[in-house]
Image 1 (cartoon, helix red, strand yellow):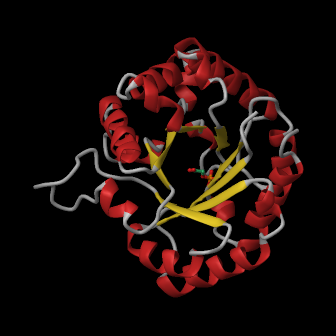
Image 2 (cartoon, helix red, strand yellow):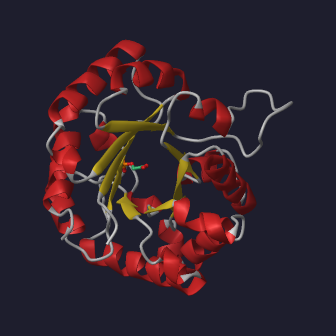
Image 3 (spheres, helix red, strand yellow):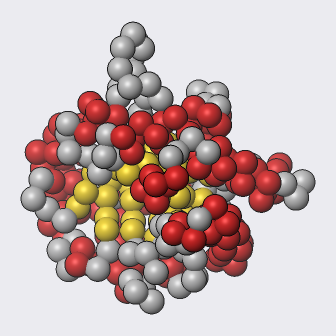
Length: 255
Ligand code: PGA
């Protein structure tokens, strides 16, 4: 059973001052829960330095929301995994649906990003998820399978265990409409089966649920067999709800 994890995805929000305040509030309050779960925040690139300064030596880890698919060189505006690693980042989200849709990220690009992260010693949090249309058309499983296999096919067999997977149905992100625990569990079970088919050693991969996770719904989600934690957007922008979600995950740690 993987250790429970809660990862915040701040997206493009906050200022250096407001985010520093938020980090202090979270880290000061999570000492006990941190004994049993991994918690982290994925911050805007420009805030990574300040985040490292505030969180070094605390139980709260940090990461970024994207990285370049390239190692280094003439890629104007890009930020490499090695650059992020220099700031002590643990995680990089890759393949978030907002990047897949707003930045036309191809399946192979997401795979390359996951590989760059692993090469730099950063854990990629690989997001997969279907749109409402795909779910209504009965194509949800096919969509997430295609997205997951594209990433696995990009990684050497002995590196695949380094990723964290996040199931984030696009229709649940930022909409206030979370998947039901049953809907989420069904997809997580399917994803775990796919991972196991690739290699028995992947059966223990951490699979997070993401999409309008709020404290009120978190306990039921965390009680599901194949839900190992959450990738939290909106509710990670305030210390109170984010800490509540961390505590609820800690209650289910090892469950
Ligand atoms: P949300 O975002 O919790 O605001 O729905 C989740 C995500 O996009 O990772």
